[in-house]
Each structure stands twice: as structure tokens, then as C-alpha cells.
Length: 179
Length: 297
Image 1 (tube, rainbow over the protein chains, first blue to last red):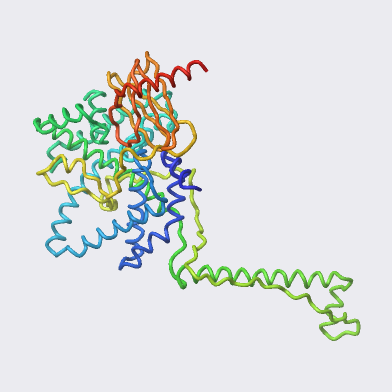
Image 2 (cartoon, each protein chain N blue to C red):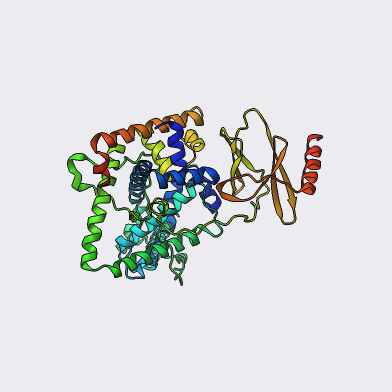
């Protein structure tokens, strides 16, 4: 598949393009980490984060590629691993505790939202994730989920978001959520 | 919250606001604590949704089997596969040749007699030389064949946290550092440094017609974004039509929009911006001629 074909698929939210890229560049990208003091597990994590960052940018239609996809992925991957190495080298014991405490709070918040998303119907989950993560526009979402038109999709998205917000607020007060 | 308010907040969080709308929004954010808290809530929900989607996509990638590292690394494994393949091929060719020889008037019994030294032993014939394919020794790392079992049509079940087993589900995501002092910065931080697109890049080199998509907005001004041969227009086009004019010059393709008796210039931009009006009288004159020629075709 040519790069332009891959990008076209990603803009339409076709996840097979993600599968293709993952397999095609796995070795090349994980080698960056493996050859720089990383483990196979770390390499896989960094590569997946890289691909997700690329996917998000490309799916939203905001990416203007001026090089090959592999070159682009390579530079993101390298950056990601450098940041990770810097973070690891700066950590002291106290900082580790502090960071874990902070991550725990944020991870709790994620869990709250994720639990509530899990309780939504499949269509709502898809609309919200396509819109808020993939960054697809409502016209593409309408087409992908077979809505009659863009306005119908927008209304549905609004209702789904409202449902999600109320699920979160039913269980947690605002102060609990922020604390 | 109304649908319009929700759409405005979404546009802000997606960096799609610009001009006076953005200024007004930021002003309200700075001056209204309740509004700021509401936007913070929206940001957290957006991050939670993103986390959910990331977990879903990661689960999808984890389901794809990649050949493991080891066994001499990528090179060794590829060579091993080729070596085994070569031997198998040689074995098949040898067996086929043997049976072909047998079918040339010799029965199985005579074969046995030959083996036991019988008098009707067939004449020894020279077996044809079996050509074994040469094993190529790769000088550079070779991509290992991937034994993948993708399930593209299968719906990957969402990784939903089970309230009863909270400890099982720990999302591994990069979380933005949400320090209070600079809320605007915290809200608009991107997690990964990705090279920013520059404005005014070359227009799409493709000779294919521009793909135009319009979205109705109840606004006097027209906003747009244009990249990679796709033009997105946001405005009130329901009652008044628009025209796209294209000039192909040595420097590249230039696009203009004619709407409501005005000409507007289209430049490559991945952010939503207001469409700039053309004010140069000479250019307007040229565009009128172009438009009139087009209408008379």
C-alpha cells in the first residue's frame, strides 16, 4: 500500500491501515528502543504510543506529510524514547512516590470515565471515540456509522455526550471528580 | 447545556476556534471560574474518552502476532526459513524424480528385487542433477515473515473496566501534566511533539479536481481549511451558491472562491481560518474574465 492510500484509509477511520502499519514497521521502530537500552516490552509500548499519536493526527485530517510515513514514525518514536529515557534518569525515590500519587489520581479519573463509557451503547461509544480521539468530522462519522445525514449524527453525538456526562455526575460530585 | 454550547466547547478543545470567537471564549474562561471548571470537566471527559479509544486500539494491535525476536535475530530466522525451505524443495524434487524413474517400466517388485540383489535388477541410470537453490546470505537485516492473524472484521470488544475487579484494569496512558497555574496551557498541551504544518505550503501537486466539502454555519463570514487537495468550507451556502475558480500557473495551482459577488483567496491551511477577501482590483478583473469565460462554456 502506498503512503497516500494508507492516509486515505486513516482519514476514513479504517483501522486496517493501523494493522498494516503496525506489522510493517514493528521491527524498524522497536529496534530504536532495543538498541538504546530498552526492553522488548518498552519498545512495544513506545511504538504503540507512536502509532496512536500518528493515527490521531492523521485521522483528524490535520496532518500534512512532507516525508514518508516511515520517516515520520521514526522521528516520533525516537522523540518518545528520548523523553522516556530523560524521565527515567531524572527520577529519584521521592519523585517516584510523588509521580505515582499523581498518576493514581489521574488514573482514577480515567477509570471513572471509562467505566461510564462502557455503559453506553455501541453507537454512542463509537461516535464519541471517533469524535474526541480520532478527530473525525461529523460528516465522516455520519458516513461511517450510516446516519441519514450530518445533522442527525450531530444530534446523536450531543445526546450521547449528555448521557455520558450525567452518568459521570450521578456517581461523582464535581469536587470528587476533580479531587 | 445546549447543543450549540456543547459544539462551541468541542470546537475550542479541538483548536477549531479562531478570530473573535476564540478571543471571546478565552476571555470568558479567564473571567468566569464556574465556566473554567466546566471546561476543565469537559477536558477530563475528553481525555477519558481518548484513553478508552487508545486502550481499544492498543488491544487491537496486541492481537496482531509479530514474529518474536531471537533465534539469531531477524537475519537468522529468515535464513533458517530459507534453508529449511530449500531442503524441503530438494526432498520433494528428489522424491518426484525417484517415482518418475520408477514409472519408466519398473514395478515395485523389481525395485525390491534390485534392493535385495535380484537378477531382474534395473539398469542403474544416472539420476538427474538436483539443483538446490542457492541460499542468499542477506547483508542487511531482512524483514522476518510475519505470521499474523489479524481479525479486521471482528469487532474488538471494548476494554471496559469491570467495577467488581477494579484492580485488574490499569490503563497505561501518557497523562498530561495538569498543573493549575496556567490552565490555558494545560488545556491545550499536546502529548507528543509532532512537527507543525506551515501555512502557505505548495498547493496539492495532484492534477485531480479539488474535493470540496461544505458545512452549513449560520454566520456571515466564511471560514475554511484546505490541505492535501481537500477544501472544507463553513458558511451559509444554502440560499446562495458559490463557485470555485482554479488558475494553473508555473508556480502551481491557485484556488479562489466566488461567493455573494465577492472573490476570496484559498491558501493551504490545516487550521480553520476566515477566508480572506481579494481586494486587488487587477486580480479581481482577471478573475471576472476567468469566471465569465467559464460561464460561457
